[in-house]
Length: 214
Ligand code: ADP
Ligand code: AMP
Image (cartoon, rainbow, N blue to C red; front, side):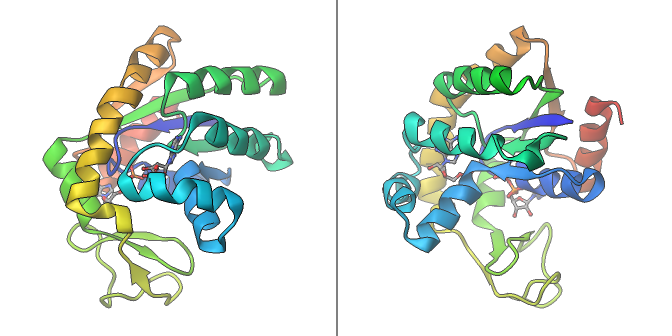
């Protein structure tokens, strides 16, 4: 299964990707996670990405396309993958098409998770992530059993710097301007399924599976 998860920031892409990974054992490729790892390691890529991420802008297309090309060429992607947060521009979508053509891979489905602006902001602001294993929680909708401590591995949870309300508003306007045109792009390719992400996490996952016919 070659799945593309689309949707505005905070819609629940990473949460649903974690469910898919558990059930189908295919790699989760999140450009946001890759950039955050690079920032943490202080690599050249991290230096290029940090200022954009802090302000809620997109990292330049050439940089982003380069890391995705390299990642998709790895052998673990042969049996499937979940791409999360890429593509985010028409240029990235065109590049993805040519990368997949080279690899002789056809996308199975593009799943677009939607939610209202108020929900997206509340979700991002309340999001907490484990420093150690990357598991995602929400202070209200999906809390850890013990505050600040990951249920899965006992690691400490933190709030992303770009999950402030102000930066989130920038990210949502970037989404509207640069990423939303991709809905039309994938509708034309007849690969597109829209899912109501304002439902409970389990119900959203049921719809994800229905859209994949599994
Ligand atoms: P994205 O990857 O699209 O930015 P996440 O999966 O990280 O979004 O989810 C954003 C926040 O919202 C997280 O804190 C997550 O726990 C929470 N969340 C995800 N899906 C739902 C849902 N269906 N209902 C309520 N909260 C959700
Ligand atoms: P995310 O974790 O998907 O919310 O992404 C966090 C930040 O990483 C975004 O606000 C961007 O700055 C950057 N980013 C992630 N994916 C992309 C992408 N496909 N293109 C450009 N920038 C990206």
